[in-house]
Image 1 (spheres, rainbow, N blue to C red):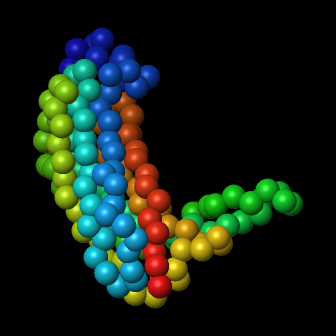
Image 2 (cartoon, helix red, strand yellow):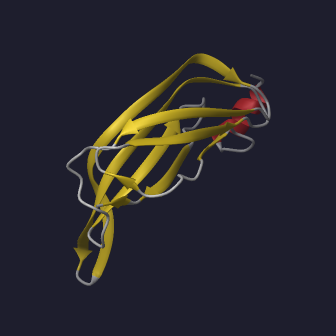
Length: 138
């Protein structure tokens, strides 16, 4: 990686990005959650060791009176897609499928409990992340 690419990557200019493809619909407790992570190469080649995908539970909390906020409660499931340092080439698009088992004891999504799917990877200089709301039904 050239010195100019290193400097740009430190501030996120032209860096690779990560996204989660839309899920087909609500999921049920105990089922498999299938999805796709999409990596987009930036303006320079970047080594990618792995991609972590996780499902988190968030709860509605009141950090200040009258101002509710959803905050991390617990990690429910996680999968690591190992890429063994594969190089994501300039402007390349890479789609990676994943499966997570949704725990059987989850409460359905409501106003107080929500679920979020996160995908992240480590790229020299920064760590791109993506998130997507997951609806769990009874």
